[in-house]
Length: 361
Image 1 (cartoon, rainbow, N blue to C red):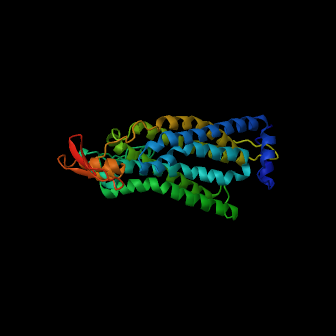
Image 2 (image 1 turned 135 degrees about the vertical axis):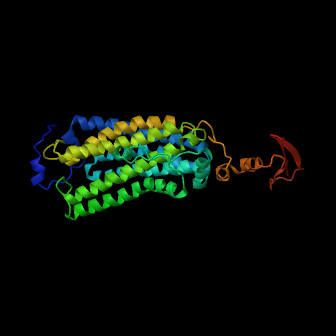
Image 3 (image 1 turned 30 degrees about the vertical axis):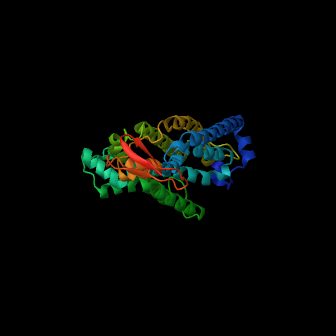
């Protein structure tokens, strides 16, 4: 394996991406080492995800399980896509697009889960007004550029704007990436630092993610005091998720800059600098996915089946039906709750539960 930094061979020759055999031959022992280690780590992450689903997520209320599956699957999905990018360079473009869009997509699902636990928009607004929680815009990354307003009041419009900042990131980035690839294949745009159109779309892509993670931080900062008691280890879970997403995005951004300034080497005649950039990114992502996969497994465990109190009506919908009838009587402690079992024909019996009298028919 001989690296070269004079990669003019790929500039003047129309070289297709290498197949699996050519990739392994060009990278030599490095490819076999990373391939074997990446395969083992990917299988381990798949096993951890399956175990987490059946031992932890299954204990959560039904309405949260789908969102928790999306969130906790991120290290596994990133590892699978990175392994494919490393071993199958010809599938690198498609897998890299999916990986870059999947990251903000998971942030969107995390926000959905937070709002579900808090009782939806109405529950959030009621709680933040009750405790006089301020809406602060002083959160990274946009606070570094002077957008730092504190002590704003919560309103439904402002809450939806913050949500929209998170939701726009996966959608807008998907549209931009598709347009960029279509224009590149149509030879209307070239992916290099001298193409103004490419620079414009790349800047929009970065801004979309920046505003997405900014909205994510704003919302979590405003709700951290409320959710700390309703969802155990909420702040830790938020930091682990955002750290994984930011590391992967910054890593991809730095390697992109190194590629455009001809710092990334090549291996003639198979591996171009563009393929080498994705190969390096995939190898690093495999290691990061393994580390964060173990952290996700530990952090997103369910210690309590409910993990929250449900005083609100929206929260009542998140409980099993039999518990919901008993919880509903908390509003009227002296009320009588009648639980009917249609398949039973035994004589009615009277029981007492937490000071409440109910009759089972």
